[in-house]
Structure formats: C-alpha cells, structure tokens
Length: 109
Image (cartoon, rainbow, N blue to C red; front, top):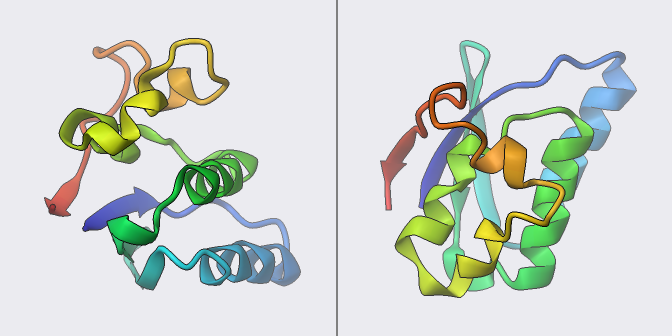
C-alpha cells in the first residue's frame, strides 16, 4: 500500500533525522521517498500490527502530520476498524469534519 503525506516542518537537522529514523524503525514501512514537499510511504500492511500502527500514528502526530491519508485503513480493511474509535486522540486528525479534512491521497491499495 502506498500513502502520500505532506512533509512536516522540521526545526533542526536533528529533528528531521529523528523523524526519518522513526519511519525506518517501523517494519511496516518498506520505503519512502520525498517529492516536492510530499512524502510517499510504501507500507506492508501485514506488518502493520496494532502496536506498530499506534507507533506510526504517534510519530506522525508528534510532527503534526495530518492523519487523514490513513483513514482508508479503517475503511478498507477490517483489521483496522479500531482506528475509527471516536474516543481515540487521533480521531479528529484522521477523520475530522469531512468538509475540513483534506481528501485522502491513496496511490494504490
């Protein structure tokens, strides 16, 4: 699965390095590439466990990255239905108000 997100603003070179190291530490992230302020992530869904998903969400949240591109996980795969829990801290960023959350950008599933 490929997902495209907006790159966050980094405060320092070390801050940027920690973000990308966080992505490298997630076994579900197979590769990533930057393109004009966007980040294309290639993920292996079978390695995206609940724990790994929470780590990924925490990393993106820490860097104030919109989670809207990830909402397709709960929409297309029963394994991730728990992501739609409205009581979770990520719900607003992932689902939010449909009129204010940018449309998801999924390259292919």
